[in-house]
Image 1 (cartoon, helix red, strand yellow):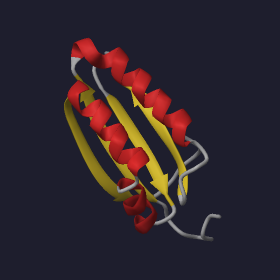
Image 2 (cartoon, one colour):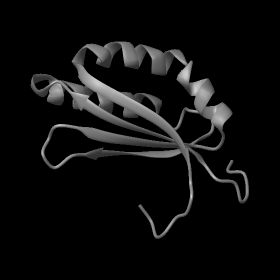
Image 3 (cartoon, helix red, strand yellow):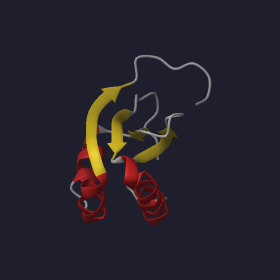
Length: 106
């Protein structure tokens, strides 16, 4: 249940799969989404944005708290997924953020 008036803890990753592995990466990412949807404690939601040039994605995930994000970061469902996709990647640059402001619905 959301904590009233709390700002979410947000993880944003810019991920660049190897060009010849992009479709495979997307399939694994979608399978992971279906595998954990509705089962991650403290997860507010997420978005996966695909670059129009087809080279990279931006994954935005919002958690209720930093502790929720940290707990999921150690969850075997997450660590095993990372092990599966790692060989497909050129780079992955994760970052952790808090909301400065919001306008509209994304």
